[in-house]
Structure formats: structure tokens, C-alpha cells
Image (cartoon, rainbow, N blue to C red; front, side, top):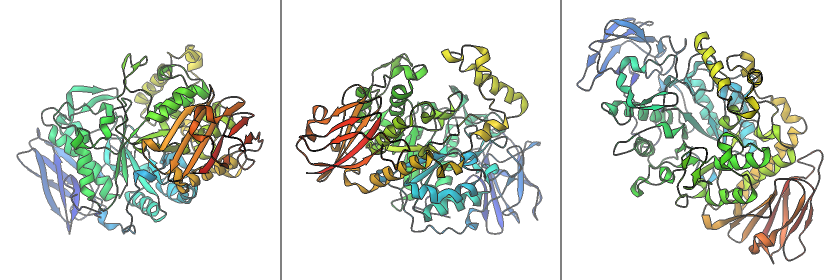
Amino acid sequence: MMRGGDEYRPTLGAVCAGGATRFRVWAPRRHKVEVVVETGPAAGEHGLAKDPDGFFSGEVAGAGAGDRYRYRLDGEGSFPDPASRFQPDGVHGPSEIVDPCGFLWSDASWRGVELARLVAYELHVGAFDERGSFEGVTRRLPHLRDLGVTALELMPLADFAGSRGWGYDGVDLFAPARCYGRPDDLRRLVDEAHRLGLGVILDVVYNHLGPDGAYLGTFSPDYFSKRHRTPWGAAVNLDGPCSGPAREFLIENALHWVHEYHVDGLRLDATHALVDDGPRHFLAELSSRVHASVGGSRTVLLMAEDHRNLATMAQPEEDGGWGLDAIWADDFHHQVRRGLAGDHEGYFRDFSGSAADLAATLRRGWFYCGQHSENFDAPRGTAPEVLSPRQLVICLQNHDQVGNRPFGDRLHHGIDLAAYRAASALLLCAPQTPLLFMGQEWAATTPFLYFTDHHSQLGRLVTRGRRREFAAFSAFSDPAVRARIPDPQAVETFERSRLRWEETALPPHDAVLRLYRDLLRLRAAEPALRPDGRDAFEAAAAGEDQLLLLRRGGAESILAIVRLRGAGVADVSSALPETAERRWRLVLDTEDPRYCSDPHPPRIELGGAAPVIHFARPGAVLLKSRS
């Protein structure tokens, strides 16, 4: 089971030990805790001993993998384990003892994915293909390998109520959602990914628990803060009285995924809601503990989703930072979406979408570095120059930026494919770390909608709230229009979000897929697209609608000339004088017939002092030179 530093020893939940199982749970305000084993030779009630720190523990001989159990608290109820490894009958049912040592791994030589070569691919297990399971994702891994991404990023897997959902309302943080398969099915997915050279990153939610099936507070209200709240309810207690065991619960959860499932990284959801006013921020402790647990044996990446643009999050702790490896930087997405699709309400009002502002976003890594934000009505962001470009994760699509739209429409659903191809080239040539969202690589026709499967009473509130949240947008001011927003509770809302893999062989999707494969192949192979330093690239606007991105590596340079809107001429040397008097050759043109069925190829002049590109419509041209 163990990989790396061998510092992980599970202490919570049910841990198999020879012919017995050790149970341990924190319930400091309870006087008596019993584990009720419901199946197997040890079936019956077994009392647990309480220690001075409020933990109840005990060993039950004869209890083993596959047996089911629950806890009884002061003679009341029958509750699943807060650290359950599997909930076969759902979040309200009994927990199942799982022995992680029973799985035979074959990835002993795997060393993880370095940030320098990370290209992440976010996916939802249930909607990724028609099987909606870990096995279904495993079956599609060769597609991801051939595409050229280096790691898949799984949306949250912690078990949740119902049989479908995004996973951000998980309540059993240690238990893979039973609707996708058993724990060993997930291990098999990770093992096969490693065999194919792919890493696996897992999205985890530590800022709140879901509204249905969350029994953590039943064991102890001290898991939750009395001072801090999140938009989704009570915040986890990270800095108040009795916060130590609450912090440890989350840290052991992170270690559990890294060691019991061999995942290569964690994407930490909404870290702005992890409120900690204590002397050492929770994220600094989490980062230190996880990295130390693997020693130098393999790479484990920790990245934050955080709208605050705080560079300190990804600085070393010795420099006053929190030690994370990377941060999602959404400003790139917002600039592209504003510029190409015209979105201007909500947080998009903070962005112009101009070529100049997009170039500035690429140069910095994010756009807001302390300027006043109209959306937040406050200064936003810090200077990112202390970070390397690779520490910032950028995208054209992700689950939030698609699924939080009323109709789940993707960027390419609202703009011309020519502009989409140009933006895709910019994303995959940028020095930042790119993230793709499932189906993006073939311009999938399917939306990605917000879907849930709550009990009827809660479901009605979710449906009503989903439609009400768009009332402030001009397009949805009419209640009749809002009523057309898909019902999250409807099964068809989920079914519509499933990818249609047959599209990959049909035009125009097959051509877009070829473009993505070729761009990712170039990103991996071209020396000029590898350097991570801020002095190894330039980004500049060339007029209102064009952007130039120059990447340098050794003696070679790659120049991406990207026209985002309309037709026009790009005179490169006026924006980037460095490109003059060099011999350039064509590497890729997004209007090549391989990438589109109705090509409008630009006229490319490479014989003069500097390249001149005559675009007939939006597109991207990649040139290469050697000094």
C-alpha cells in the first residue's frame, strides 16, 4: 500500500490488522461509543475505550474486509463511520471495512508528473462516457494518452447522497462514491493510468460538507467553526477551540488519497473558504505534511482553486508562503470569454477581453494584481512575479465555467470554430500550465449542466435556487425565461451532459481533435515551449484583435500569431521587434485542411524583414526560427 516516505499510518476509521480490525473515531463530548458489526464472524456490539483527547478506539478480533458496521453513540442511533472507506448502500447505510493492502499495484516505478510537464484534463466520472464509472474512465485512458495530456483530474469522488451529482456536496470524504464503482475499481483506474504514463489528480472539498448524509457533526460539533461561515454553510473548524482533530481529519484524508490510492496530486476546492486565522495556516500544514510523506520518491502536486490571486499560496513556507505547487488562475479564461463570446455581466464586467489586456494577463499570469475590482468592490490580487508561469493553471473551459452557465454551454457553442481553434492554440502555447475540460479537444456538442439527485424536499429548493441565482442577469430577468433553465434534479439534465464519443470520428470534431493532438505534440517536443522562466517569453498585442506570443528555448524560438476576431493583417515586427531579421518557417496553421473542413488559409509572408500574416478570419499561425 505504501509509496515513498512511509510516514503515512492511518489512524481513523476501520483499519485491518491481521485477523482483526482496529476502529477509531473522535467524539469528545460523548460518554460511550460502540461499534456495531453487522456482518461476518464478529457481528455484534463492541465497546470502544475513550482516551483523554476524546478519541474512542478498540480492536475487534474476527472483523475483516467486506464486513459492515456502524457506530452507536451514547446508546443512540446507528451511524456510518465519518472516516468510512466505502458506503455500499449509500451515505445513510452501514460502512464497509476495506483493506487497501488487498490490491496488487503494478506502479512501483512510477514517479509522478512534474509540474514542468503537466497538462491536466478535468473530467466527471459519471458523465465521461456511457458507463459512468471508474471502469468507463479506465477504458478511455488510451484516448487521453494519445491526446497528449499528462494527467487526468477527477472531479470530487467523496461519496454523496443520491446517484448523480458534481461531487462538491460530498459527506464521506474517505469513501469513493459507490455510484462509480468499488474502491479497487478506482485503484485499478489509477494503476492503469500510471502504466500508460498518465498521472491522476483528485479534486477534494475541505471547506464544507454536503447537506444530506453529513454525520460528522453528530460525532462532534467541534468539527465546525462557531466563528466562520462559507457560502455553503458552516466552515470547518481550522482555528478555534478543539480545531486540532478537525485539521488532522482533513490532513489524514489527503494522505489517504495519496497513499491508499496512489494519486499524484490534489486540487483543493474553493480554498478562499478555508478560513484560518491561526499562527500557521491549514494549507501550509497540509502542504508540508503531504510533501513530507512521499519524501523524494515521487512527485505529488497540490493546487488551489482560489479567486483571490494570492501569490503567497504557492510560495515556499520559508518565504512566508503556504507551500502549494500551483493555483488555478481564471483571469485568462475570463479575458478570452469576454473577448470572444462577449460575456459582460457578473465577474466578466471586470474584464475587457482586449488583445492588450489578454497579453498583460499572459505576461503576469493573472490580470488582477491589486487593482480595484468592480465585481468585488475592493482591490483584488497580488503581484505574481514571485511565481513561475507553470505555477498558474489556465483554461478555456472547466466544470465551473461551463456548468455554472444556465444552459451548460461551452465556449465553442457560442463562437465560430475558427476563433475557437485560435484560442486553443494560444492556450496550448502559453507558458502557464494548461487545463482541458472533457470533450473540449473535439469541440463536443454536449453541454455540461448542473445536475443533482437530492431527496424531493431538498431537490425542490435546489431547483428553485438554481433559477433564482440568474435573476440578476438581463437575459433571465423574465421568470418565463428562467423557467427554461434545465432542472438540476431531472435525470435528463444529467444524461444530456454525457459525452458522445462517436463524435470523435465525425466532422468537424475529428479535425478539431487532430489540432489538439498536434498542438500537444508540439508542446511536448519543441524546446522553445518548455522553459518556465519569465524571461523566456513575450506576449504583446498587435492591434485590437491580434496577439503575439514568443517563446524561447536555447537557440530556438516559437512565435504564435493569434487573431481572435475578424480579418486583418498582422505585422509582427511593430509589436515584437525581436522577431525582425530572423528566418522563420511555418510549423502550424489552424486553417490547415487537416484542422477544418472549410479552410480560409491566411497569406503568410516570410521573405521580408519580419513575418506578415494576412488573416481571412480568426486563426493562429505558429512559426519557428533558430538564432
